Length: 620
Image (cartoon, rainbow, N blue to C red; front, side):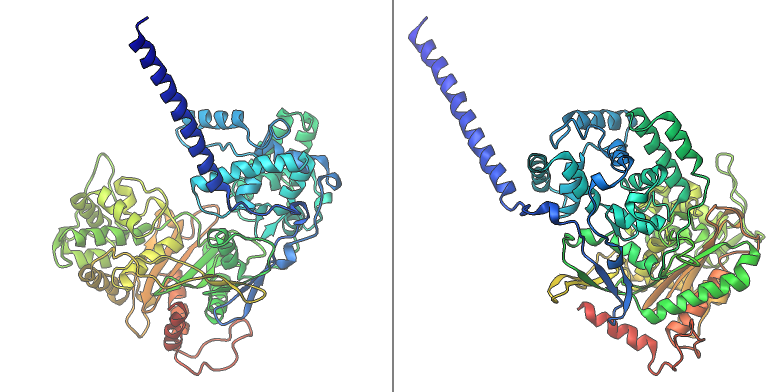
């Protein structure tokens, strides 16, 4: 072989060896950099108690306390075997066979997600979940993922499987303010964890995937279905017998007795507690959270909703009502998710419902942005699109009417013609731009409110017009402090994105004002400038009124949890408009307030509008 060939091969070999060494050194350097600030895990096993959390209104009043839910540390040896097995069966079936990271589980999850076309399964082990959810920051980054993997391996080396299970069960979040299995057993079933039945254990394990969605409080039907899946998985893995599974399933129809004191403010604080980890990492410190809630507005909202439901709602087929009110910064000042929290913890402010004609707000906004004027004429005659013919509620066609008249009379055929002109993709995009996060169908029925959204996002979207086109982002936390007064988080007023031009906002205000002056929302009118829109879904299954009077934007919804129709006379212009009127009159001190649950007995001395504006200074 020629010398030059040998020399060439030698150089190539040396090059690859050198490159390999450099890559190895670089990889080690990157790895060390990513893990250099790993949390101190000494004495981890003893950290069974989670922080107590006190929620305060903006003026410092205690509105909810979650500290009473954090019970003593428990170990798996003191629990029925099926409690920990239920968690393993549904969250990490190979728990006893991996060393912190389940590579087979990851591959299985990737395959199942690929086959399904969307994410249906995760590959994280219990050890990874322990690291990710309870000991690392909530940020989504490569650094945190690497730390999560290292920490999971460290946990498996440091502790036995029983110890890891005990730590996990004592610290994981089960929803409704309950951290840890003992707190969850007490919150949901009024008993200690050691006394849980097999079905109750399956229900708690089922909540871990999504504490709100599968909570026995929020949605009994989904909770039962999830528990059935957990039981089936336990049987498949031979944790229980078929007879034990069937016996547990027979208990599903029995109604659990829960007699735990509840607070109506928990609709609001339950919403907040789901998002605290986005701001700080909850450790062992007791926390004091100052919120945006206005306690007087909140008590008034509770009183009005209960009074209207009791006197007018129930007899007209209305089973529930919800209200949310935000100020010009997006701060939530009042949130009531239903008639009584102790009877149902499902927060209807966050529920996906059909908002009917209230969704036309996005149709008309988009039309105005595409150059259509409020005084332009548009046909109100019947039309058919692909065999579908939108109907008008109590409206007789006259030929052509102005865009202003079409909006005030909520004429469906006019809304569809506008949607045809500007295109549904533009309307859907505008809704997303204004903060709607749920999936919206790209079809004309969506223009009439056929796709599900929630009251909080709809109300904030209307708020954008109130504040001259800036996007309104709802929030509820002003600050988080520890018991020593150290500020761990503070909200700051930030300039939001301009999503509607001021010119279009002014035209939109004319349309919304016409609704309360001469249109379907006349019952909502108050003696100061106000704007709003009614909405009613098919067969009167939902009805709402969303509107604003600076600096408050408020949304009201009525309906039934099982989606059954209300009486056919129940429209957004009736009870929702009436409730909105009553709430806003009190909010601005426009009439002598009624006694609110035996609390507000003194006359309000200062104008509420000025007081609300002064509160906003806390964000500056």
